[in-house]
Image (cartoon, rainbow, N blue to C red; front, side, top):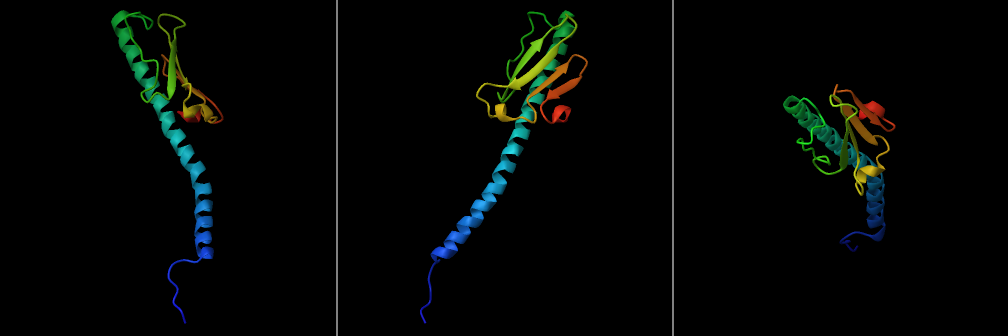
Length: 131
């Protein structure tokens, strides 16, 4: 009787099929985890800008003073941060996915916002659970 060395084509095809099934299951889960990590970039950026605005208010008694410089993007650049000033003693910060960012496909958490009172809101299918 002859002893076989190596793998048969059938054995190799079974291994390839099992790996394909595992990859099909794992990839969507992986991409969702990456999206969640990138959402933290938005909240970190908003809280950083909020802290800068509070320093500006303590120095100039207004959030919208021209001497205050604010970053336009989150730390990793996945979100654009836009401040609006309804009054000198009020602000609303909005974080939306940056152009070309993979976060544009995130329908669960499409944008984040926070105001001077610390009220946090988010849009998307998860709503305020995004924070």
